[in-house]
Length: 518
Image 1 (cartoon, rainbow, N blue to C red):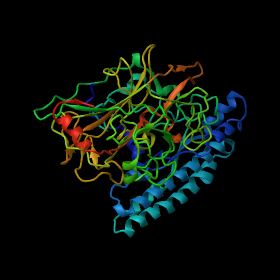
Image 2 (cartoon, one colour):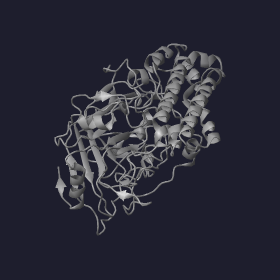
Image 3 (cartoon, rainbow, N blue to C red):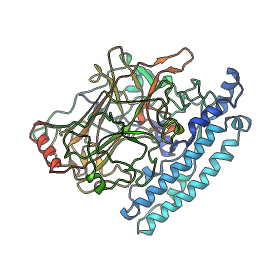
Image 4 (cartoon, rainbow, N blue to C red):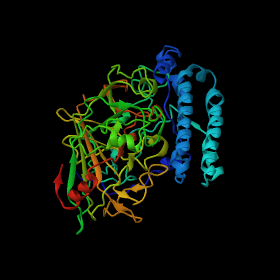
């Protein structure tokens, strides 16, 4: 599979939003029920609904505090993670209130600021100060003034939209080799407010989608009309590691789901605010430890592979009521519709075009992509959407593909392939690993090349259709935080390396010697 080696800078609009840390939220408890209720608060005429929507706030904008914390002492990390989860919970409650008070917002222009955003700032300020205390208590240093500035939140109106540019959204956004900031294009639909296309379930919110929080028509593109954007991989150098190791772990046919995320929110139930598919290790939840992971069963054919491979589920918004329709992480937080099980899930470790690799350390944690691109911009986006028959031509980051008849949706991930050689995790879960240079494949900053984890998930999806009124029939989308509006760019993947019987060394050896192992 090719990749795009162009390094695109994040557009200025994205930088401005990232600088102000706009649009970071953590869910919307009771969102589904409240959005349905709010849909009936406004007057029933279409004209009045449109007027109400134009005056209403689409989402709350808050800085992503966790991404700013790059130097948290190990002894403070659990406490900080708990407080970060509290920030998410606070925004969950604020977003739910936003969704349930549409009529009040229409009647009072200052309602959102006085009743939602202002109180939210006060709660965040107290929580952020506890984070400062946690860090300083164990001898860490923190810029208290800068941290304090992250308490304030802003808002985004439903009418401040950026028109999606079809295939123009896709320029420079492919990177199957994994350059994490190479996701350019026009940034349409990721830093702007939601599209104004109406949602039948929540016309007052006017954010599209079955749950009123996306996706919208602008989030889809006919892949046959998208511009080709896949470039060649770097040339292999003399010391290239050209082998691969494939591990067969199934497609989660046994429906092992939960809404936890033990990497970013250890010890916090529903820390992800969306459902995950799990393959590999079968006992992964918020309370998992290294020891419990080592003792757990695995869905992999190779029983020495106990690694945790997990990703947000994909749903088709066809009106189906899933098992979690009334649960946190599911319908209560805007994730609705039928969960799709992949037809196939290929998990493969590949080498470096520039050097040999070292074995992955036990319990190495990696997150690729960013679940909050609407907040953080595209700097860490690493989503790749395509269709069978088009993968070597088009890879989309900012839109979902509408595939032609006989073609299936393909979702691919390429994880960071450079490791600092010391740490199995970092405070913001990013700085201990990195992507290789996209042109040469070389790891920078003294990092070591490790086997690159890649995944390819294939889904049978009935092609969505755009209706005359701008709504989308049978829309599909990746699960996510409701305020992120189910954007394609929010796709991400999580991994914890857990092996026994010297499997990590065997994987590295296969890759280094040019063998194709499984």
